[in-house]
Length: 240
Image 1 (spheres, rainbow, N blue to C red):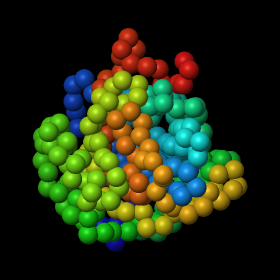
Image 2: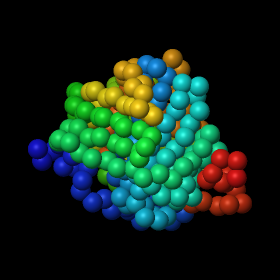
Image 3: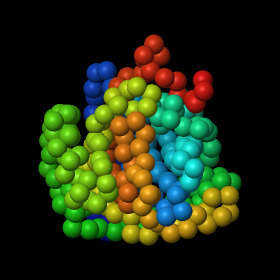
Image 4: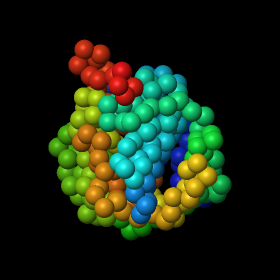
């Protein structure tokens, strides 16, 4: 059990220092598509350089509209970088409860219940091995992340991948996925209604240069963004 996603994910994360950037560390479901056209993602970041740690749930409805729920204000969570691409950004009570070494449940109070079961594949084992061996300095190099992006998409079977690029609000981003697992099974109820079985979207979703995977992926790692500048970057809240 020492190498289960639960045991690894629950270890407190520390952020490497860096000038001109904002960072977050923890785990999440990079994305989970459903055949009905719904799409969910989770971010659990106990370490944040811009405020307290937080949870966030991203939801795309079948019409393609995105809402991000976060346990802290949008100004210091995911909407800080993705707000301009959203229909709404809301502060809600969110819980992530591990029900076993490879399973957990996410709840957005009164809105959503999402069950997730994780597993390994040859591809995730190989990518995790690479992530654990790669020196921190190489995780910062655009050329290395671009190469990893090109390899990860076909190897993991998730469609297009970008580990470096520009977010909808204008900041650059850099993703460092150090450990990976596949989502073997998942189900969710939104407003008490089952949204159906997992399945890829008809067209892969993206927010700015960030492409959402076409199959469920669970990741432990860090994300970095350009330091927010109100004069150059868009606001966290849609329409503000």
